[in-house]
Image 1 (cartoon, one colour):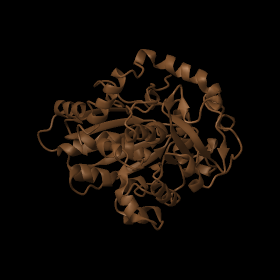
Image 2 (cartoon, one colour):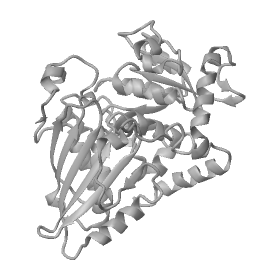
Image 3 (cartoon, helix red, strand yellow):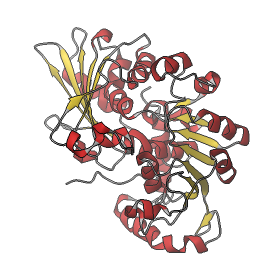
Image 4 (cartoon, helix red, strand yellow):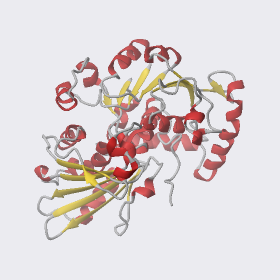
Length: 398
């Protein structure tokens, strides 16, 4: 709902006034923290320069979303990486598996039972295949460990929808029903008080942010929504499969999951809640020959009398206190490279006067705002920190 992000934006302002690094000092702080990494093993556990750190476990740390979590958390000023689990890379340091992390963390991967990892943590990130998160989340709840699940197991308020689209029997529908959907721009207050957060999918994040103000306003013809989405190859995960091979992807673009993609019901669930009525969409994703990034182009018929100026004011007000969502100038349309590696979402819109249809474009990084960056944003809200903590960096462009 508009303004719910205002609570967290207010916390952001309070945090900055209380001594959090201003933009001009951010990179110097990062360098200072990087310089301290070599001393981390020698410091008192759970503290850094006298600051008590929150102990974090990442279950499934060496997939793309898990590694992105480690990249972001290694620079986070308020957390300690207490456990990183990986079956395939057990015994290896993360900076050996991902040399890009060298100088930021020496944490080792362990082939731990996920439940055992909970004994070390105050919050656990679950970057597991579908169907494996619930048993860990159940045990975490019993132990008072907070949960942020990056998979789909807890995203659906009605577990029957999950069962239909994922082909798995849900082991705990009640847990799924009470988990908070982790889209901070919509559910900031709920996330702040949550013990279990279901991190949204990548396509749903981009699509919902593109449509939320419009559907909340009542200006849309609900039955007319078309979402044309394009993603980089990392969205398929870090596994060998034919469609992800270089020769198959390079110089090639193709649709997949047509009228059957698993993110369809997740998008519909959240849009229905925003609109206050059932929403059905036409959603077609495409695979592009790039590593990361999502671009959604959304088409919606407008009710009579709605003009572009009014829509721009609507979007600006809705996201006024959302630090990562930006409505670009009229003549500047989102590019995936502008948000690459960042937690940003870039939006723009245009009303086609001939068809009375609005076209909305939304660009995010599928691994950051579409997964791990958003998970860290949720962590910040859950612990009362400014929601930008550890995420204050621009896209990598060019």
